[in-house]
Amino acid sequence: MTPLLRLDEVSVTIPADGTRRRVVTDITLDVAPGEALGVVGESGSGKSMTARTVMGLLPRGSTVAGTVRFDGHDLPPAGSGNRAQRARTVTARRDIGMIFQDARAHLDPRQRVGDFMTETGASARAAAELLDRVGIDDPLRRMRDRPHQLSGGMLQRVMIASVLLARPRLILADEPTTALDVTTQADVVSLLDELRREDGTALVFITHDLDLAAAFCDRVAVMYAGCLQEVRGADLLLTAPLHPYTRGLLASRPGGRTRAARLPVIPGRPLSAFEAPPGCAFATRCAHVVDRCRETRPSLTARHGGLVRCDRVAELDTGPGAGAGYDTGPGAGPGRETGTASGVVAGSGSGSGTGTGSAEATR
Ligand code: SF4
Picture 1 (tube, rainbow, N blue to C red):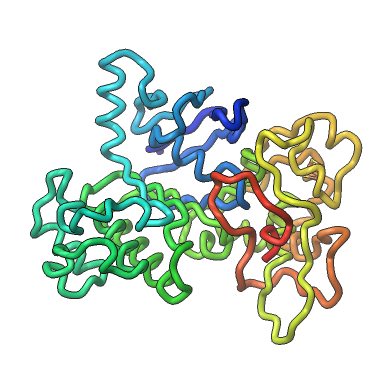
Picture 2: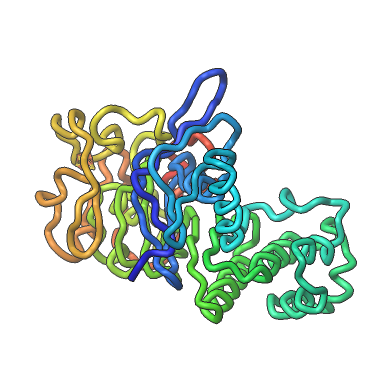
């Protein structure tokens, strides 16, 4: 099937503190029409920057190498290309909707909810119907409210409704539930999944929660230091992960513990792309590192129906379930339980930061 979205060797550099920083490195990825792709990684892994690259929402002065194609057309960075190309890009991006992490930060506090939802030409009636579908009571009254009159959960529903109102063919959801409490998170995610399935909309779901991504995405891409490390069907990623980083993330989940126990950790702290060492970006934290890992950067290669970036994968792969026994190395605590199937994994925060310590990596 022809992909709806294709990223081909996309690398992104942004200006920061008087210098330039690489935030995304060589991302090659497809999303098929109607497919849900989860993108998982710690803070600074580049997942939000990847979505922003697709939308042309990078900071001024950023540079993008490689190509982003949507529905067969190149999407050059915002402002680049000739007038015709820019017009085509603007038109194509109207078929892509983005749900941001913090709805309150993306709504004008002076604007009424109804005005926000209808500013692109949708009718008030259609907006009210969609608000009703996303679980907003008395939608016509709520459309007269301003953002400060709605809770965080309601605002996130408003943002989802406003994106769906435009009937996009692709939704980029950047940690849409991070600001919500756990109960509301589950509601919002199920709702998003239900509505996008009804319309056959493709979804890129960015999260730090590997279990959440695997629960309702078809495939999951794991990012570290601005790079894809593993891409695999959601079930296989949980049951037979191949990359040491994915294995470490899965092993460090709280799982079904019934008593307090020290969780295994991935030693060190997450790195952003610009901090990554030569060779394998994960080498500074990997329990299986050998000298050659530090010399050559592994390529993303096909294995067991997915893609993995590790030159030792053949030696470490002992077949399905190998991930259950992965030793997360120094810092792994006593009483650990690995390979369990529930709980929260990976770090918090978006992909736009620079990463702050191993506690986030293992919570
Ligand atoms: S290439 Fe080496 S350092 Fe990198 S993930 Fe594989 S074993 Fe670990």
